[in-house]
Length: 477
Image (cartoon, one colour):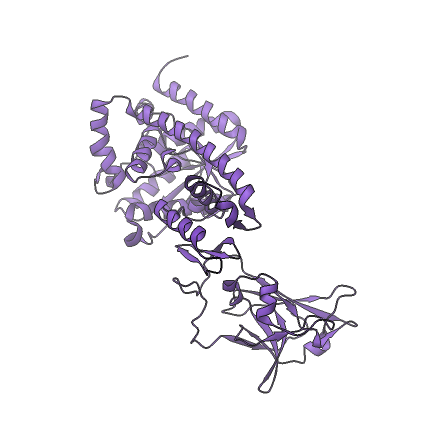
């Protein structure tokens, strides 16, 4: 076999993609196509592979509109795909949150979200990107400069899902060129005379990756030839260490987990390092942004050191971590809540309510600002419920708790305050203000019929005829 650049790269690409497809089988592949040298090399390699294996190939392009040449790049990608008979699609995106995240990061987030949408639209589970060994070296250096932990220093995997990037969990990103140098890709493109575009922004050293690529990496190459391979090897060592940390976190979670929360007594038995490792894993399972080491240290200190009756709330950009009855909870933020306190309304505010009359037919009711659905369900055989004919004649009110409400759950049980029922059902305090109630309105008087998280008052329940049971379903956080 010839040792030409095109043959060497093609053989390495085929072997890498074969390995990926063994664990992620797919009859069709998608390529992220910018039109630059790297992605054009990937397109031609994937095209040859799909012709040999009988797979369908799609190419997806994202038009950011950041360059005056963006339309030309789109036209170039479309023309090449038409010439090679490759299915082509694209998305135009507007860069959001550039002031907050920086243009480079904002463009990256918009690009991957658009690629996820394209994969979903065409039903493609596997997206190939042109990341190579030099990109891996840049990633490891950037993470090192940011003070990242083991997960960051692991760099990029050859294959992984990225729901936080794509906005969906059913798309896998694969990098079959990750072990290859960009120099080899350049030789391949030159040998086959593959036309590609040049993005002028790649020469702007104001962007972090460009600064590394243009200023730092040439100096490293001059003094430490082959540093890319060594950084890639270090990333592999970090990946192995990260896998061990993940195994440990899973074992610790099994011991500390109590339903959806963590048992603080068990957390206290762990070292600070193991506790932080477990908390990172807990956050990752919820799809939450990874907290900084200082934030985790503050959380651990407050959660494990607070009084047993303390109403702990440590705020994260995407959630609140709360303590209740010696358990630690992740409480996802809800639309309309106060970012600092996590409350849905201030104590001095007028509580929202929604008056309605059930028509006897509808099975659900949704009303803003109640983050959920009220269900009207047929009672099971032998189950008590509100007589349907009676219920449809009542003026009903969906409202939040205002204080002083009382509920009697059964004829042989005493009437108790809603607060007592919440405590008996171990409903955390922050959840109580989000749980609505349904009352019957008679002039100025309200009669409580149902309290979410508790149940229905027995005073108006019937056991015969068509009966309706009320059930509240909160929106997924």
